[in-house]
Length: 69
Picture 1 (tube, rainbow, N blue to C red):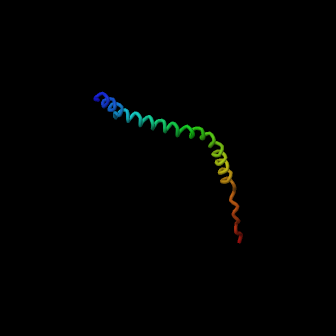
Picture 2: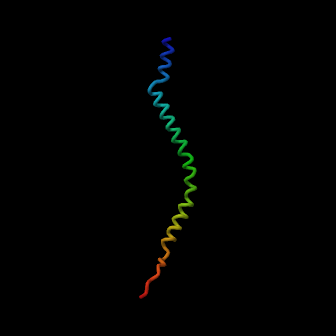
Picture 3: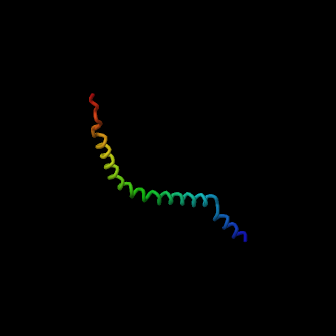
């Protein structure tokens, strides 16, 4: 009976719990970052088009009418 208790106690040690927690955290971070790295190249074209559109919009002269008295 003592052998059974000691095996159970060894399975639930603090280092094992910390190891399981850190492993789960690492896997969660890995599974979260993989889709993000796949989508980053798809953001290149909208950013470039948005930047060029903003430059074109800002480079247009103001067409406010001038009051001549």
